[in-house]
Amino acid sequence: MVHDDSATKAGPGFRRGELTVHEHAHELGNVTRALRSTGLTVTLVPTMGALHEGHRELIRRARSVPNSVTVVSIFVNPLQFGPGEDFERYPRTLDADLELCRAEGVELVFHPDRAELYGPEPQITLNAGPLGDDLEGASRPGHFDGVLTVVAKLFGVVRPDLALFGEKDYQQLVLLRRMAWELALGVKVQGVPIMRDADGLALSSRNRYLEPEQRRAALALSAALVAGHYAGPRGPQAVLDAAREVLDTEPAVHVDYLELRDRELGAAPADGEGRLLVAAKVGGTRLIDNALVVLGDGRTDLPENRS
Image (cartoon, rainbow, N blue to C red; front, side, top):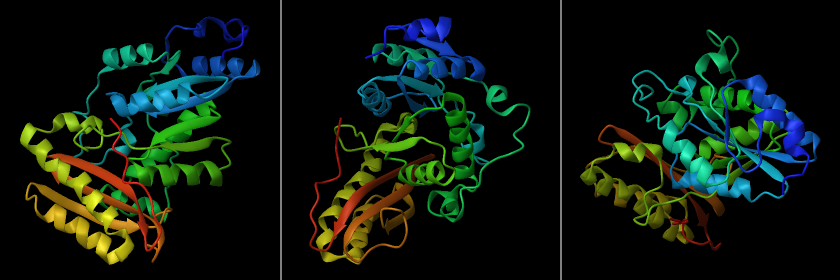
């Protein structure tokens, strides 16, 4: 519940029950600082826009935090796109995004342009370390440096107590948790389970690029994760073999990697919890997915299929 004096202290940049869009960092920072002075916590949902049901779930989780105000950031971050990637064609749907935020009761949106966050050209960026060059980082050099840099900037502007990220980008989540702890940023980074369509495809802004036949082929990714899950009691190699067998049945899916790791993305454990991760191209669209797998005698539920 928002304190009665919060709107007064936050000034004209915040109106209870209404959506206010801020384009300037200092203005939003003044608002969130004033809100915290009333005893509220601030929860951040960072996005690149093109919001879908997965983002809606993140927003709902943020809105459910007691005594908290939710900030949604919308910024297509150029630093995390490599040469030949889809920065220019990445969907920008601001009007629809704001309508979704309004429908979900969001009161603050941060929508800066590049110059507002980086100036003429960023001079100081973060390095994601060895994990940043692995898995997604091996195929997309510098990607996670860009992710950590922009999120650190957003943390600095918003000063949130809590930030929510989807588990679909699991490697990103692991790195952001490390960054928040190692740099003592005072932000709790929390993952939210993957949202899926009824057919099992993990929700992604890039799904809109898929033609109908490509979308059908893309279902092999989630099907491979389910097969790997069921093979968990037989050990790591059985998990990978079962998942690979499913992927090999779909010639339109060009696998970049299929990996089984531990929860922090180190070497796969012989038993206990692991993370099965897959990345593949379907047509010109790169998709990623992952699921928890329990190896050996442990048990867990199937990968979530929430829609």
